[in-house]
Image 1 (tube, one colour):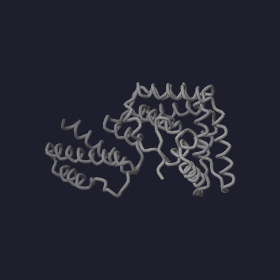
Image 2 (cartoon, one colour):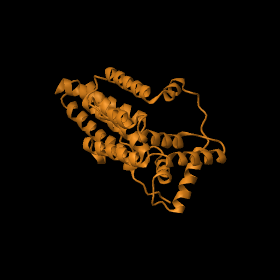
Image 3 (cartoon, one colour):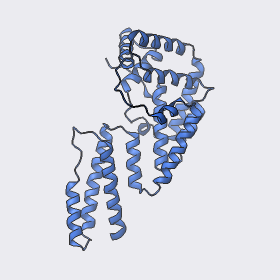
Length: 280
């Protein structure tokens, strides 16, 4: 059964979208208000941070036994009941209002959310006052399965583990420094390349909107190559350009977007930008 829930009121989703927006704004060189929103609304004095920590723990904590997962869920539900609800509602209202005043709401909330079903289930247990008994049971089952899901063993990333163990202010500062370094390194990107990265950051690899965007850009790239190849006098270069154009294929319906697709399109942009510089 599908859980009815609002992205607008889901604290876990609000936090995820703000961090994505921060990354997107930084890549495109825009002045981002997301960082100030995160600092203002998710600090140690706010109920929003307390609620976010409950969302985050339920979404990331793993146990092998159902009994441990059940104890975790019950403990965090009890912790949530102790939050100052009037303050929490006020803080969430103010945050959502600032988001609406700053961003296009439709664009801001259109991104597909990681583990959406899990986030919706957490919301249903914590905040949905109209939840039916059946929907509560289904949400608990979803969380139990998620928490006890077997994880694929992988080598620990010491840097990432250290980052995750830092306090929130230190993590935000580290995040900001990393993004500044990214900007310094990739300051030479053209607008079309920055826009592509922004779309990629704001979407996920199986997003239909992202796939549609990339396929449309591929059409434009092929048109540009055809246009500029007519201005090239070197026949050998023209042959190479036509071969390149023939190799550029749109993504099929069953395929998903991956890093290679984005990197290839970035390279095609580089070619088009170079042709534009030379041949106007």
